[in-house]
Length: 495
Image 1 (cartoon, rainbow, N blue to C red):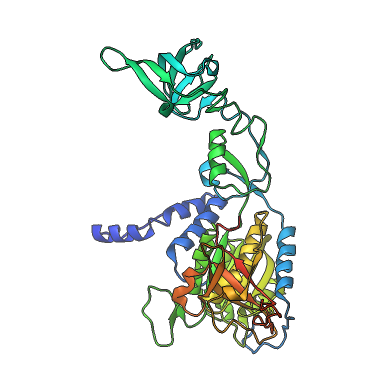
Image 2: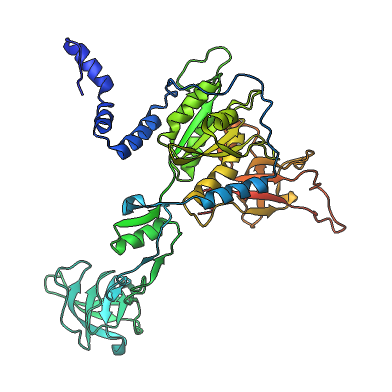
């Protein structure tokens, strides 16, 4: 590789500053470090936020109104089952990650404890180690033991003696109980007042009181994490205590997010007439992050066959799953490019729901590698709804999560502060973002936050309004006949 720079120091500095970030990538290409090239390219896309760089590749799609491709409209349940069938059949590989990067990953093998925690009896509290058979009374303080002492007391505790002990410290030989400090009083100090010579035990101790026995937290050879279980915060701490520094987990798919549209631009750009700034891509990227999935910003593509094909080709090089935000136009370019240029299988592209009717799910092989494409349409609220219902489920299935979906809870109509009560006159279910609260009395209340974009961050649930169901109907006792189903999708509610 030869780099030729201009002559003046100012130009050398400026030009080198421009290309220096690309030099490591160039060296990886020259030395054929394929894995580094792919991951590095994904990082560059993620950091830049730039629009997709055009290539010379042209699409086979002709600019004519769509007449050839027709796809049936399916129910939400069928779409969800279709995603499950396709993703469950996908072979999942494993990888070993360091402990510090294993949080929220799915373990690919059962993890057993090779040692007990604690491996020796320890004290629960700060106090005095004693013989429980001595009961109450005055004890001679033998020594002081603190957690982490290099030379702990090795003499056996005798009758009438006590040893000052700290929480977590090994129980001295001969002791079988620990008396809290508040249940003792000092009887005698040393002449200089620096040490306690005698202490009075004011309460009769019980055998093994305030002692953590061997294996009380984790017993040796016990199963700490089952295969397919997600690593959470406390599990991470247990793994650290057991010295598990490398964890075998299921590999997560790499994710790219693209926006398609002739009228959208990056947030940093000045608005030209007829243009809007891209909101959907950033909504999706950060919604995925809320569920602990990192994604790459693959930019904006124009709504024409060549640009869409080029954007997909570039994204496929470093991503397994591509999430696309686009409008559904008369020419329906996305699906036609997928089918004609990539021989993709369109599993579905019309769902009996609102919003999200034109959600697309497709799979294909690119350079002998399996790829998944999920096309979402509409405003940020619509993209968020279909992302929660379909994208999150697909990603969880692809990493073998035991919890791939969201289970609705039943909320009675009198819990809603929405008037009139939500009603759906169409023949397909309607989904609305809502904020669900629990009152001090245990009652559930829900507030519709779907109407204003500025309110969407308050949403923690998805209200499902079934078609033509009269939720306001009551029986002879004045009780409501029907309840609403609400999906609670907060990241802490499910795994």
